[in-house]
Image (cartoon, rainbow, N blue to C red; front, side, top):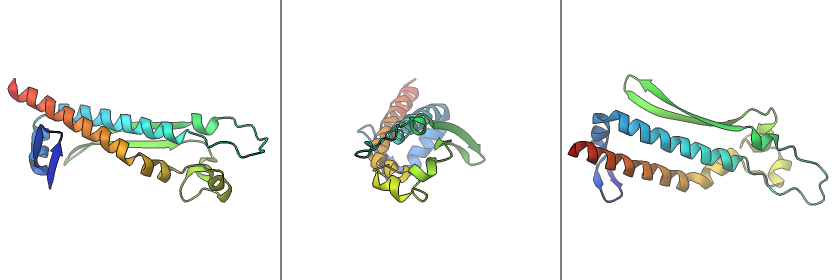
Length: 147
């Protein structure tokens, strides 16, 4: 598989992984930051409410939007480290509103986006964040190699 991260690095995936393995702190820091940035993007988009239904007198509390959270952590494994991220909501009724399998028909009809909807809509933005992080890693690796 060929990998290209902006104009500074082009090679096969194994070359990139070997380079990252030589400087794990650089890669881990940049990847962690990118994952956190992507999670915050998703968290913010999950908290967006659709317009209230026409004629509705229900007053929204905003609890669902305020309780979206995200967290990233580095997981150390025998084969190496990787970054794991999660976006979640602690409200007991959240799944009925925004979970792709549990969302009720009324919430779907009122325009509530599910986690799957937001993730699908955000794929390009998240890919951009990761490519940007990859470019930063390449720049940092080049600086380390020159030093």
